Image (tube, rainbow, N blue to C red; front, top):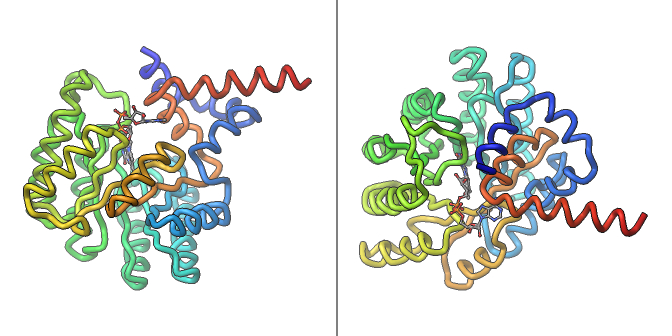
Length: 307
Ligand code: FDA
């Protein structure tokens, strides 16, 4: 119920303007977001790298409606790649296709993605295409599979909550496209996605096995201890060394888990979002764990007491 409410709110643009203007919600957002500028993200990536993890930079933004905004987002990603190279950061980049204009025109999106991939290839870096709501799944997968023929330095994200995902894992494995596996963060109808968490988790484990057995350097992106332990076990059974796959976690979530995985000798990448367009991202993080809202309430009470 709460999950659905937060996901509903994530699409309300009017509310976005109000919420992003509030100091308290902004302070909650900065638990999950590095800051407004690339500068902030670079600082966080340096900390992440110093602890032994890699990073993936996400310049926040999605469903842009104007070509100008999509072109600006592209320039921002090109700037991020230059900065990663200049500072020798251990980081790649995550991009959403609707940020590069997929809602405006697929041709525009392909042109802009091509520019990002071209520069990333020149710098021997990698671009992960995030997965959005199910209305975009087919188009995203098609575009990645197409682009991958020219730019093998791109990979995709697949979501275990969708009924179709095991088929998509097989397609990605056959095309040797790198996959990041997630549970899925959007509000999906029962016609396309498993409504029960137990099924989403079971499919996650199944997809993980397929990726470890037949995929290319899969990224197991979850904070779920049970699935992480299952992944380690499956990899051992398959005789897969710890440098043939990686775990991925979101910035600001389960720092303890990050440290444990690193101590045990696993590869970890932290997803580091930055930018001012954090509203839908924050709503998805609240939907996953409504208890995060308690943080706001506690902050309000602290402010009131201090006033
Ligand atoms: P689950 O929700 O079962 O949580 C397991 C445990 O993790 C919880 O018990 C809690 O301890 C902790 N936890 C999870 N979410 C938390 C939160 N918000 N705040 C605090 N603690 C939390 N989705 C998508 O649809 N498209 C995408 O491209 C991506 N990309 C992506 C990249 C990376 C690196 C990660 C880790 C995740 C994504 N996701 C995503 C989000 C993903 O689909 C999913 O919504 C979240 O990872 C939460 O699910 P878990 O797998 O962590 O399990």
